[in-house]
Image (cartoon, rainbow, N blue to C red; front, side, top):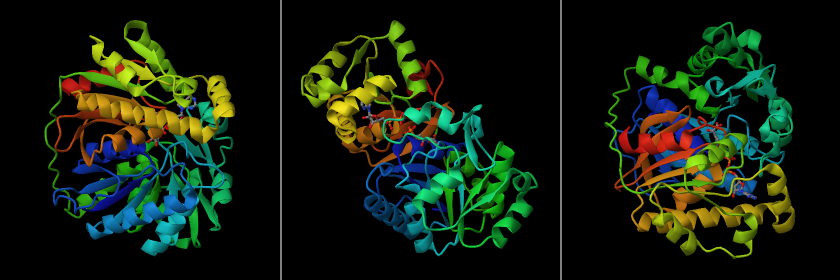
Length: 413
Ligand SMILES: Nc1ncnc2c1ncn2[C@@H]1O[C@H](COP(=O)(O)OP(=O)(O)O)[C@@H](O)[C@H]1O
Ligand SMILES: O=C(O)[C@@H](O)C(=O)COP(=O)(O)O
């Protein structure tokens, strides 16, 4: 294994796995830290964790353990993947996990670059933009668990770390890889936010960091990395052709993002759908068995969703507690996925990072092979050793008709 990635959630992990696969590396996404060694053909291994919103010390411990496993597989470089919208609270976890990984790896200059221009996330003058809006003006301000209320990444990261937070502005980034490398070499010990508004900037940053042990950011930063290994003749690319599944399918959506709510609304126009409310789940007035039976009785692919408008989510959180409502809904979706898979469902589409993590963990999936891209940042995946294919959609990603597209790609490629 050449490159080891630690993803702080499961959709984000499939996002970066997709990027590395498209750039010609042989990639496997693991669910948690594997208990065994990786197959020798894997060039990039992505360990998906569900650490984005858990207590800091747990996130640090799991991330360090993941890095130790990746180093044992021979990785030359470790990439800590977090969200392209820098999802975190003032208390963590991006800063503390980066500190711990830097200590482990002996790295004292760490690039922090969540930019993903293809998905509309750019960084300019240290501020993160979502399309033409500041992060703090975008839908992310209403995220159920990590509301992003400040677009200045330098300020947000500074809440989370004792390290100096540095910045390489656009004017330097635009000057190219050699100049960026010099700026990094001249910087003091620091976490360094790098501006980036185009893929060319990400390629140049990627080239500039070829000798660094630790990188952090969104999947965009990964586009320049495979070439570093390719130039050394280390990439063999042994990706298998896609093999889909045509059996029963289900769509599970716990994401409350603007993009997902629109995708849910569009699917509901012609498809079968059942809403699960936080109240039903928290008060136990709906059962997993009942919804599984309903889903299995449908002739077309059913959508089960808890996706709701911000006012509805806030009201549920006020009544049941933010963590409790989230945990109850995630557990519900996990148990539902598990019952449906046991009943023979072979295509599963999930929406939402935390939701997808809960589903993959409940399905006791070990690893996933990366297949064709469905939308920017969302690949089709085959579960290793099982007749099951899956797509984990990041809350903010996907075309308006994403769900139907995903069902098609999971079947036919
Ligand atoms: N109706 C709801 N009320 C309260 N919380 C909800 C509701 N629906 C989903 N959630 C919770 O909100 C969180 C959404 O996060 P996630 O699945 O990561 O989606 P996204 O990818 O859009 O961030 C999950 O923890 C989920 O359980
Ligand atoms: O970088 C991104 O935006 C995604 O890869 C990601 O991490 C998405 O997380 P969720 O929005 O929680 O699905």
